[in-house]
Image 1 (cartoon, rainbow, N blue to C red):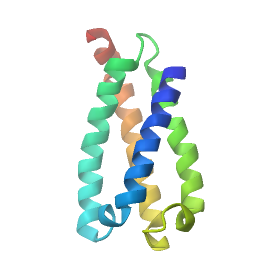
Image 2 (tube, rainbow, N blue to C red):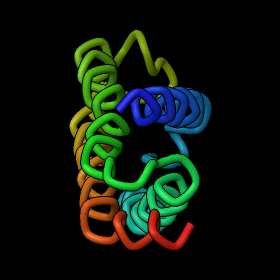
Image 3 (cartoon, rainbow, N blue to C red):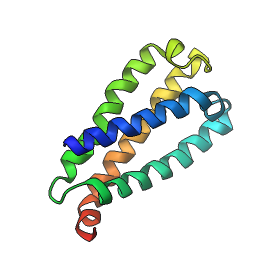
Image 4 (spheres, helix red, strand yellow):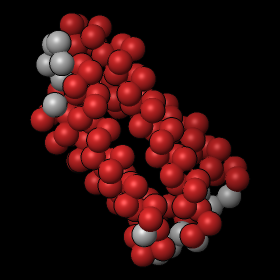
Length: 124
């Protein structure tokens, strides 16, 4: 689980910087939101599988998946509560969309790793 927590925190930090700098572009219009959900979902699932293959130990897939999403779930909850201060380039009205996008991403991470993680780890 420790590997998942460390990797999850690093991933959250990268995503945080991405949204801090370009969140107003990624969520700036309905078309951008749809594209962000679609492409972000695909990229998130692929990265989750790759991280599982590279970092996870055999027999610890579920623990790795939990560790991977826990930092983001906790820290993004705080970000949504303080949205205006944390993401000054985005209007507060985007807080709900941002929260939904984060839940979507964390759900995809869990689903990907729990569904195919054992096979990915065995092949590594």
